[in-house]
Image (tube, rainbow, N blue to C red; front, side):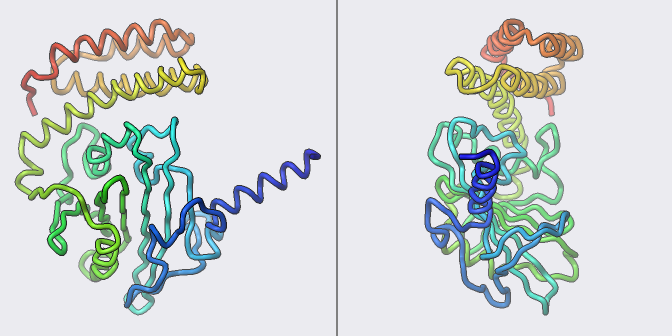
Length: 298
């Protein structure tokens, strides 16, 4: 195959995935491919920033963990599939984006409940004032209201995310879309109320889980290096990133200054010193075993 033909083939293959013309699963298994009155499902969608055509069949499919990518969800050793579509009501003046992310049942899934609301919290794990759990049709979902609303819930190992942008005072909630997707993908999340969400116990649990997860992420990356499935540089960068977050949390909640440790890690990273990075990881893991059950000050 010539170089030009190879480039053309790769381009066509990528286009088939991103426009939804090629899919391993039936899209209708994950998305509602009909209108949800008063909202019309769009068959042509455009990127909000580039204004380029995103889909010509009303949905897109990505080999990607969707909204959880921002929480550093680990999917390097498996494929999460994100199905996305849009609905709109011109009469109401409201456009809605829906993502359904199919996770494959890997050990990364144990963190899904923790990761699903990470963007509804600040850097140090405190829930935002606009974040609240709700019962819709007697099912628990999570809602964040900033410049619009984001609705999220888990249905087994599927993550459903519905969002819109606009005024909370003048636009109605797209409750019809939320209810329709709850029928298709019932929430399997445990009931939690606002008081529980904002309790010290909940905050403490989330913070300690995040510290635990960051060390776990480092182990996952180093395992990929051991299996020769990831490049050294990527493993070291991802590990140092998570270790820095661990150190920030340790400083804030356990009182141990982290500046010198972070400078040391930066030096190891700059010199590609994987031995030094891994030694520090073991040190932090040993410290965590001794201290993770201790009380912290919020």
